[in-house]
Image 1 (spheres, helix red, strand yellow):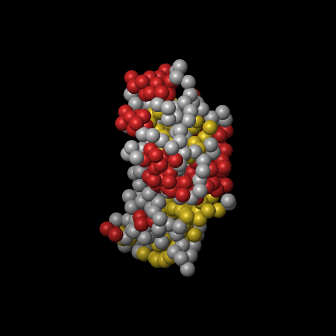
Image 2: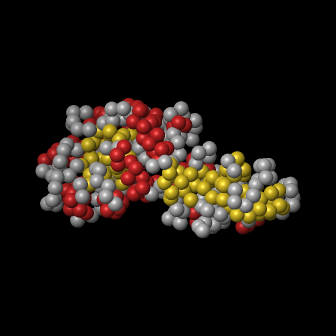
Image 3: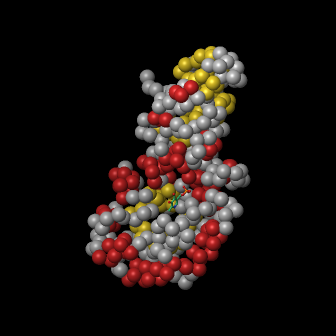
Length: 361
Ligand SMILES: Cc1ncc(COP(=O)(O)O)c(C=O)c1O
């Protein structure tokens, strides 16, 4: 027997989402971003499924890349933040990890460190996000020094990252695209800018490599309807079961802090999933939950291991009935909106406590 809470991971949905990204950017190569445990889905499970479907993977750091290499993933893996210490360079080169160079310290380490093999480098340019990347004034010098350092396996890929691509009316994205094109013109080499929202909605930014993460897991990065994004299929279904049922009278309250009180005679279902399982404690009363496939509102504060749902308006619900917290029919982004966060955060915070089960391999 095991606790009936699990994350089902549908690999046919993953293949569908990769195909959609490819259809949107048919001439670009696809680098799948699998950092933060593949946004909570399980880095090794997802990397194994993605390796035959994509040209490369991307992670945040050497540790994440080594987890994949140790599991036998052989495809190119980009370190999106590059290395944090000079000695990491040797292992990165040995393991054929691709480096991001985004500041003068990283460039100097590369120039000074004898490496066991040539490396692929991505030169990151700050076009307005102001988080990582070289300034527009530094681009020419960095590019020359990279070409001259004698450590590169190929010309550097020129890359940048968007700050506001998920806001379709925000003027910053066009400006970043224009600046990126102007800064990279004449340098040669491949370019990469598009994360999920840009892959879906900013075709001018597709260039030679797209770098989606969130959309591959089947979720729209937009908070408003979007024709292509709404065709994505969620890879993860967070599922559980009803473990207790009770009737309460009008005026009685439910859960810690008694913050939901019945305004009528009500039927409450208790479900064995809580914030210890990645369901957000900040989810408000009224957050939709699928019980037997039908929507019912969260009623009462989320506990560590349980939630309570008002099923008064549903056909009879019994102990053992299936519950979906997010997945097909209930996007994680919609739950996130009721918890004042994003689907990115909910997925990424999924703890090891929840078993991941792959279906449709
Ligand atoms: C540099 C970089 N590229 C691509 C991505 C993928 O973004 P998304 O998950 O929105 O597709 C990320 C994610 O944060 C990133 O940091």
